[in-house]
Image (cartoon, rainbow, N blue to C red; front, side):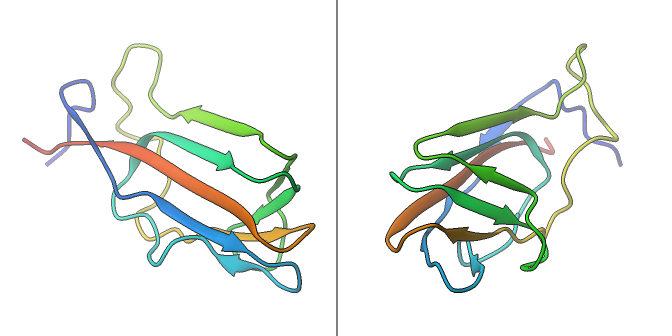
Length: 111
């Protein structure tokens, strides 16, 4: 059964952590619990933070205080084929200790 992503959205639990400097640290205690429609990556620290999805390779480095919003819906509001996989785990590594990073997202309700 497909989900009509233009109907209703709900808020997933935030993924957050204070990332370290020696190695990539998992952000949050789980991976994505749902396929996000809109996802926000938020570097809440005064240090740069590198983000990875495999714990080894940097996907993107966020300068201090930068946030990025990805709207994964198509222009017409229905996106049955473009999202990030459920279970995807994000990792972060900072330029200094005590660097807070969070990931927030909304997903389509299957109602």
